[in-house]
Image 1 (cartoon, protein in one colour):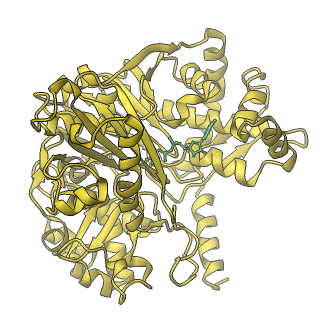
Image 2: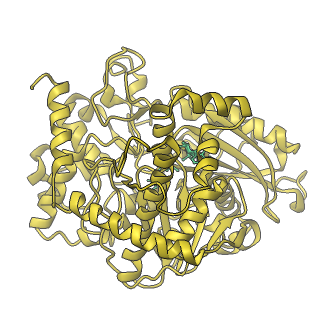
Image 3: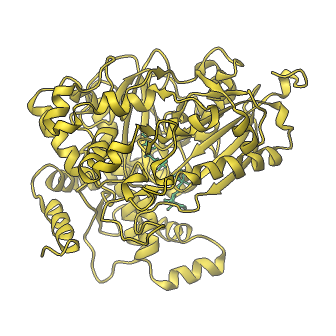
Length: 560
Ligand SMILES: Nc1ncnc2c1ncn2[C@@H]1O[C@H](COP(=O)(O)OP(=O)(O)O)[C@@H](O)[C@H]1O
Ligand SMILES: O=C(CO)[C@@H](O)[C@@H](O)COP(=O)(O)O
């Protein structure tokens, strides 16, 4: 703390790098008061259709980002948040960040993203592969098949399957489709760590993403023999591109460099916390750091995180990592790859103009209009059941070749009916996850909801009814950014550990939504139908979704 800074005025900055934008929040260290906030939309958003530089169409399932967009968040949102807070920059004693996880940046030895070099800017593989880049599914399938065959000990720690979203599947895809990019990349870096590199000038690898997305268990990655069997040139992937000493969550990664101080307007030399993940960082912000408290961070996707005092292998979970959320406890993670994204897809592609016009006239969003209309319905009235797999299935099936379904449509089906069925489908998806944890001996006793979707009260009530659990809601509208601020406070030495900082700075409103008994019963019947469809299409009853994906790929490649 500087001489000019009175301890009671000290602030920290938390920055949350989401899928579409980055948000900065200035938080008072002593009580977690959020003094100012600012959002910066990524200029290129999600690059999933054409590569900006060339206009070249991207293949299906691709999702890239442009790393310069992340720096713009530091350049614009951070000073704007400080200004909005009405505090002097000198009061800021630390900065912490969180990122979408397994958003991977191929970089040179000094951290320059390959896409920023003229020789690679036209190569899509030189760009950031966003967490929801799902084009590495063939590689993920091979990794899973081989790991099963060889009985790799790490596989059960990931619920029996690793995802196409993860470091190894994406890395293997780069090797096999763009060997020149693979050779040129000195490191395969989580964006969560790349941003810390930009702030401190030093590369640190956070224990959270390394454990969940980098297949690091009990101090070891998959071995060279395993990797060589996938592809001989992949044998040294860990040694050449990945391996790096780990840094624990809440630790100080370093201090803010002169360059980063100029970029952000924050004082040079303040503490920078080790990189973290948007989902995991939210648990302390919601004061949900004890076993049984599952936090669902509901935005474009949903991540479910929960600490546990026992190690269990939960089928279909994303992973379990020692200290993955809080030091001293096992951190569990599961997730749904599409939630808000599915509602957005529906609103943007399937809703007739009259709804858009009405929403516009009333000054509300189409989401709000559809939710208002759907809220008048009794459970089951629309006669529909849907599968929430428009962005594939992360938990518990771990298969991104799966796709969405709406069953039961008739000529009388309206947009609000399908919208409600999609809301419900995502709640059923969460129910499957909650049941999987409870059945595996890691019972979920409380569901705490965070993220942008908490504002939809119909959706929240549906989740409470479908899971038959009371819902607590995080007190902050900026959960991940607040969580990052909590980690910044710990890194700056203001609190002994994340637990203590969470107690002082986090907040939660308990039992905001409670199950309505009649709805619980009605949803029980609908959930059975969901399960039937879930198992039929997701567990090999009918592989039509995979066949359709192949037909699509062949058609796009002109093979049909
Ligand atoms: N009223 C609403 N009801 C349901 N979904 C909504 C509503 N408003 C926005 N959304 C969806 O919320 C998602 C954005 O969530 P948010 O938490 O803000 O973002 P992120 O996941 O990037 O952090 C978008 O996918 C959007 O479609
Ligand atoms: O994968 C994870 C966490 O492990 C998330 O970062 C990813 O689902 C993105 O989350 P958002 O939808 O941007 O909140």
